[in-house]
Structures are given as structure tokens and as C-alpha cells.
Amino acid sequence: MKFWPLIRLVPRATHFNFVGLAPFAAILSALLIVGSGISIAVQGMNFGVDFAGGSVMDVSTPGPAPLAQVRATLDQIGAHDPGVQGFGGPNTFQVRFRSVNGKDANAGAAFVQQQLQQKFPGLKVTSQSTVGPKLSSELLVKGLEALGLALLLMLGYIWFRFQLQFGLGAILALFHDIVLTIGLLSVARIEVSMTSIAALLTVIGYSMNEKVISFDRLRENLRKYKTTPLREVINLSENERLSRTLITGTTALLALSGALVDPGNPLFSLVFTMAFGIIIGTYSSIYVALPVILLWGAKRDDGDATPIAPVRTRP
Image 1 (cartoon, rainbow, N blue to C red):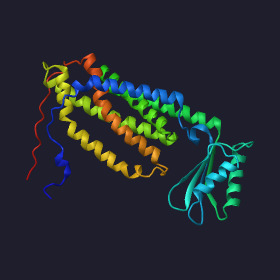
Image 2: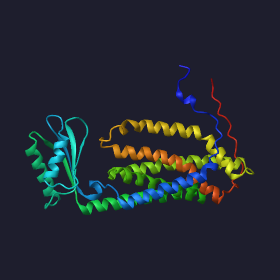
Image 3: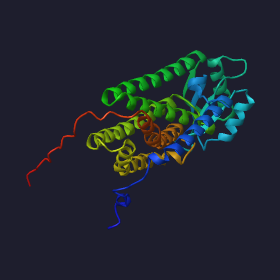
Image 4: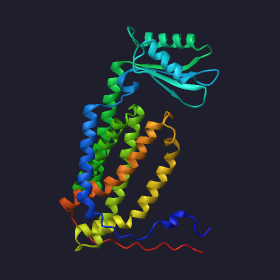
């Protein structure tokens, strides 16, 4: 029991030179951003039915789901970009397709349902939804508007809470996180849906939380060490919060790890995006947001930090 909890293995005091690695991190980030841009421009995004339009059916069968046979049937009847994915249990799966040759969205969905029930006796469609091209484009615009509004609100909050250069550093870091996350989705050909937008918003929230904690520790140390060079104060601040960052990030990743082992899980794209966002959000807090402050400089005229008297409790 003396070796438990393992959290005790995390060092309480570290002396890493975070600022010294910033130039190498800048090169790495630039390469990753360029690679993401190339992937997005060349092969684009794997937009799902939410953004590209099409139909989704939740299907159940009396016996084990014949996924391969269903996929072959969809190809034979002329369904465009068909996808078959198991979920929930061995007898349930989901069918997705963009359109059917020579048919509109509703007629195509009815035709596919008829063909599947004829080919596989006992097959039942438990739910079905169809998204037209107009609605899918509106969903994409609304999703991008949600991302833009979140960035603007966070810029205003950081500017009000700290200083302008802190806000610019945070927004630059968030753009960095979003571009790399979208680039990874493009490279891995993971389907982009409204769930992915929700994951991106969650990544923004987690990343911003990391930056607020980092900025708050930096501000307190700037008030304590008024004559210490800014780069040394940044190193001190990040070393002081390193154990907290490792514990929080690891706990979040462990909570998501269960869904990452099954790529067929309907929530895989959500969990995958969030897991990558946690890693890249922690990285950008140190090597994107803070270097902006280091280059710009920070004001130290907020007065001395006021000691807080300990709260005494009765035994």
C-alpha cells in the first residue's frame, strides 16, 4: 500500500527549461500546421451526413448483423458513399449513404429500406433520418458560427481578466489547436459531423481552461518577482503547475480511453477528437500562448500580492 496512490510518483518540484525549447516547438507547430493545411486542401474533409446530406438508418436483425453483406447490397443498389457500422450490440448497426441513383432523398431512403428488408428477412429499421443539401450547408455554417463566437467571447474574457497580449496569445493558441485537430481528422479520414463540432467546442473549453490557469499563475508570479526576467518567471510558473497539468490531463485521457479501443463506436469521432484536443491544448498553453507573452512583454504594475491568512478551524 505504500506505493499507492501512484500519483505520488509525480515529482512535486521540477526545473524544466520550457522557454529554452520554445524555438524547436515553434518549428514543430509550423510543420504540423502546414501539413494539416496540405491535407485539408488535397483530400479535404470526410464530411458525414450532417454536413454533406444523405440518410441514416438504425437497423436491427434477428441474428448477428451481416455487416459485410449489407455493405455489398448497398453498393449493388447504387447507394453513394455507403457506410455500415455496428453499435450497441451484435444485432444492431447503422447504415449511412449520401444518395441513390436517380432518386431524391426521401425516395432513396425508402428504396434502400425496401431492398434491405427484401434481402434480409426479419430486418427492421428502428429509426431513420434524412438531411437535404440545403439543411446540411446550414448546419455547417451554424457550426462555424458557433466556433467563431466561442473564440470571440474567450478573447474578450481573457482581455478583461488579464491583459491584451494574454488574450491574443490564447486566441492564437486556440487557432493552433483547431487547425491541428481538423488536420488530424482530415489525415485520419474520420467522419466530420455535428458531433465533431461539439468535440471541437469541448476542446476549446478545455484548452482555454488550461490557459487561464497558466496565465493566473504567471500573473501572480509577475507580481511577486518584479525584477526577475520574464523568461525565468514563465519557467517558474510552468514548473509550479506541471504536476497539476499532468494529473488533470492524464485523468481526462483515462476517462476517454475506454471508447478509443473500439473504432466502430458511434462516439469514436467525438472521443478521438477530445483526446487529441486535450494533448494539443496542454502543449499550446506552454509553447504557443506563453511565447506570445514573452515576445510582447507583460505589465508588472498590478501591485504586490497580498498574503492570505490561513483559515483556522476548530478541532
